[in-house]
Image 1 (tube, rainbow, N blue to C red):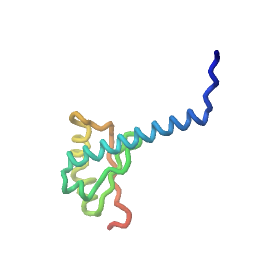
Image 2: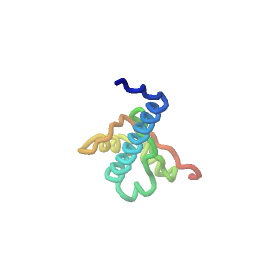
Image 3: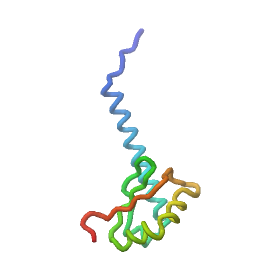
Image 4: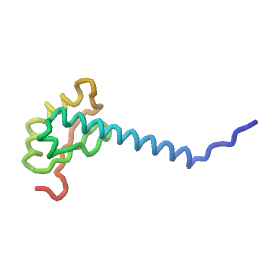
Length: 102
């Protein structure tokens, strides 16, 4: 008894869904780790937006905080993000100003 071949559309749908779940899981992990690394106060005003090709993009509410994170704390933060039991698989950080912020 032969099985009918699977439709390409069904295979692609499953692949897209798996990829979306993996991305959501990774960004949730990044958000938890972000709070742990930068602290509640800073995490209130900045948050991981995406993880792509090993780069964690973090949205920041103010240009002053963006300058602090990108200029003074980036190396320390990156080190802490890739250390520990819930290490993120990132190799770089990118900070962007949240839309509508100055």
